[in-house]
Amino acid sequence: MDDNSSVNHSANTISLLDLVAVCVRRKWLITITTGLTAILIVLYSLYTLRMPSDARFNYLPNYFEPTTKVRILDEEQSAISSALGDSDLGLLATLAGASTNGSSNADLAQMLLLGNRILDDLIEEFDIIERHGIVQYPKNSSRTLLREAFETEFDSATGVLKISFKSVDKYFATEILSSAVEKLEAFFDELTLRKVLEKKQILEESIAAYESEFEAAQQALIDFQSKNGIIDISLQTQYQLNSLASLEGQILIKETELNALRKTRQANDPEVLRATMDLNLLKTRRDMITLGQRGSEDSLEIPLAQLPELSAVYANLRSDLEILQVIYSSLRSQYETVKIEEKDNSERFQIIEQAEVPERKAGPSRGKICIIVTLSAFLLSVLFAFFLEYLRRAKNDPVESAKLAEIGRMLRGNRKKK
Image (tube, rainbow, N blue to C red; front, top):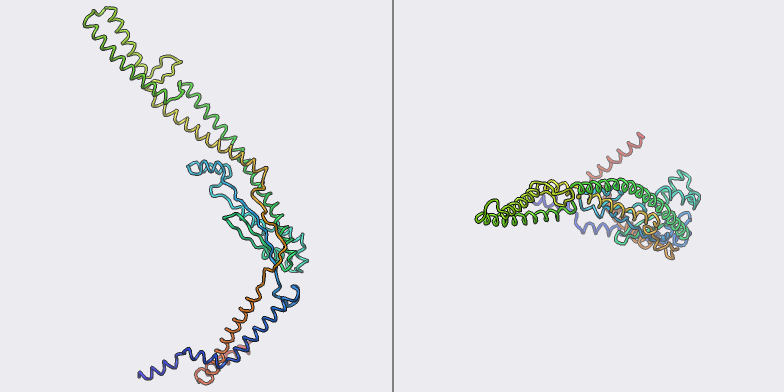
């Protein structure tokens, strides 16, 4: 039984030598197919190299790809975003049309370049429909043709957008690329200027609104200070505490002096009466500070009892005023920046390298094409050799031969039904 299993296993196993044997047996098929394909593709490459690009069977014409480089700068974060972006007030930056994430002018430029407006202008200017003989769906087909010819590549590190155009006519490619970049610059400036004007209008409205709020908050603080005699509440509070401490010390001295006088003099003695009167005046003064009474309308002293409430109200009014002042100042700063942007749009779109007529072709690489086609022909010929070997063996195998015959009958039957 082990011998039979070994025999069956050997029969069902294909060794590397079997594969090599098949290749050797069909060597002429593989060699001729590969060699003939290599010769034909080389001859065809020479044909495409020597014939004009519009020749009937020239499917590998030389194409050229002039390139221009444009520096695209993203809009800088607005002053209000910088001032408030790290705080809870960052949401207010949207009032100025600012975004903490910024915006990509490079994406906008690429979208505009491949948009219908610029493409339609190029189609009309260079008569693309007539030039390429487009008959079916002329507008959409010509747009697609130009979109496929344009290539863009943006380097975020340098902010440089590289734009190229592929064509078999190097002069035509250079002209259409230069025209496209000029139209892109004009369209880009138009859109960005419109965006600047919209931002300017929003800023003007925001400034007017916050200016009114700022003036109201400022007047509320002034009225509160005038009503309560507040100039600098922290200094005045410190002054009150120092005054109270001084009065307490004077009262203690005066009480000691009065007690000493009472031991040696009568109650109606002028010295005793004077000391008593001075002590009462000091206590009255102390009570005026501690109980919340003012010495006069013009007094700058703040009653001690009123200090907590007045300090809280003053702090709230001052905080509201400071917040509005930061927002208002930031809006004004952003407004001045927008006014500068309105006058000068050139900084965001700069052509740093004009398109030049290329001296060398960009493609195709006929050497690589010849190698790829030759290798493909070799592999296909090897696979075909294995297929022929299978058919040869199948004819000698009754089981496999019967399967092939059945497949043939099924195919013939399908043809008769059709």
